[in-house]
Length: 128
Image (cartoon, rainbow, N blue to C red; front, side):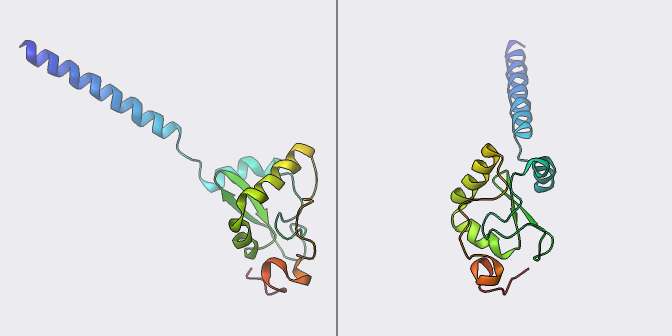
């Protein structure tokens, strides 16, 4: 009888630990992209593509919203995502710096990288 009580107590303790662990994992689960976009879009600091420097919503059409490790990044077109992924830390720093300064455009976007002169889409052949 005593052994049964000890086993039951151990099982209850183990069950409580497993429930606590499952709740912790659920609480730390990453947000889906739509939630990240909805939360971060109102305070996104740039009005231009972080890669090409093109105005968001300009001649390229509707901006592309992309979530990288929980951070919203906005592009003028899908073609810029590949260049962003080649060095995300560089571009995320531009966004963070703009947020800190309250700036409207990245200062480190490549000169001449707009769609009319080459850049992200290889001379205007945008993959949008």
